[in-house]
Length: 292
Image (tube, rainbow, N blue to C red; front, side, top):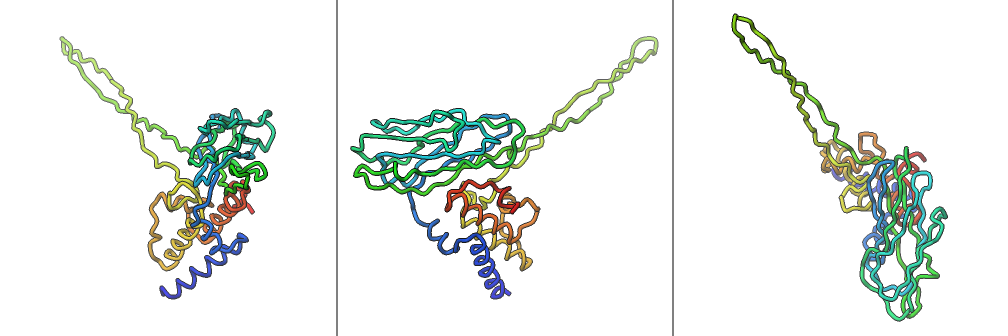
């Protein structure tokens, strides 16, 4: 049986990768490589709130000049501010003027005399979430390669990781109110008895489990090809009438189509999400992938 499941798992993994237009082996190799990265953060909020998304450089090979294009969904988000956070002594930070123009451009220009090599938060983006907005809003990050280079003016290449604003993903605790009635009787003279009813309101708070990051089964803060592999392995175990091996939080993260079950389709969606948002740098929300 296990031998048969091994072949089933291998077949599912290959089919899932091919359906996304990327070989899984190629994606795994890129995932494993320690590549320079410009990444946007993921945040949780509700409509009407204001959120801050961080742009950070990871595995920095050295930068003398950097230019980024930022894209977002104007139907859900309004860009309020873009602030420089990079501690680069001789760098001049220039952001796009009109915040309604998409893509919004961020530039760091220096005299080219030195490469800044520290990993750090480059900038923060403040967004207002529009009233009535819901679902995921992707924050796209693209590097303008012609304006991004080292001190020797050679091209500085970076991978990018898009951010996500999860709107309405935070669950709130609803107080449960229990009405407790206590009767107290007091006796007076001449055998006259008065009865007093005392009502006490007791609030009972039921804790709720935090919402996991959709697709992030291993809980490392990002959605990648490893999560797709974990989902397929768990599905194969369930097909063999074995436990999935996932915790409750991990299972909820793996069930990306919110069907209540784990299937090979969930693994395919996870791989497509990783391919589009990370490898192809095309901001794509879960709802768009699932509705195809």
